[in-house]
Image (tube, rainbow, N blue to C red; front, side):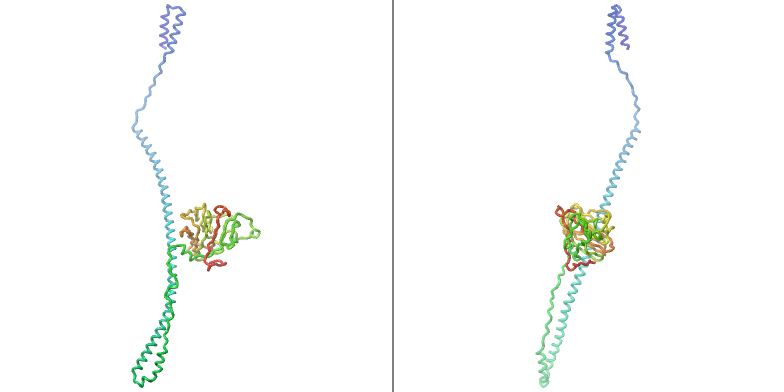
Length: 403
């Protein structure tokens, strides 16, 4: 504003000799010039505190602690995960170790039994042949004794005086001429039986326990179709029950399966099932007393089922408390089921590759029966395949249950 006053003062003194109109114009011009000049802005001063090295260091330390704490948490989490992975790996190895030991123990026991049986058969054949050979030796020994005695008698006669020599000589000569040599019975010394030493082929060994299994039509779910020889079963879709079936307490009305006619409460039994290229099926054994009606239950040993099942063409599972995915490298076309009642074992085998799949170990109470559940694909659809029970030994074929 001082510039404005100076301008006005200058204009006033300068315009004293000017006319009134001229002075006002000069003043206006001075004011306009003054407005065009920039007015300087005020200057502000800020005073910053002096840097504190201690606080800065403390901040860096706190940041480092925070970062390390976060890294420690991540490391602990990783250690926990690795610990779980380690425990799972040890469990898997332990499970495989038990499986290998169990199967080799089974093979060992089978081989010991096979050895005992072969040695007993060999010993029996040895006894029979030796008995016949000994009989020949006994007869030949008697004959030799008689001949030696006769030879001595003739020699003794020939050394006597003529009078004694002629006495009874005809009788002695007749005896010598009438001697008939014993003809030993021909005894073959070739072994009658072939004593093959079994190789480590578990399927070959299990075949010794093979039984003939057939399907029980009275237990079959209404959607299942059984062959006339009761050896195969396939899914044909739902159908209405016949009036006479309403009171059939043996038939399954919830689970799509059928039982085998045979029941087992002791011993060892083995059968094979042709599964082909079916993408799904269920096989195993169950208690004869399982419920055939009502609500669904979990197919586990606790409820009376020991089963192996296939889903989605490559997911083989077993169930104890929860489903367990089984490693099966080669898809079996035929599955073997082995029941050792006294040992409490149900084992499943890939007959195609002669390999073990899985074994349930426990205890059994009451009779057990085979069960079968085929693919739910309708006949003619892709993946539809019946379950076919392979024939057992003719010697064991019977309509009566096997025990």
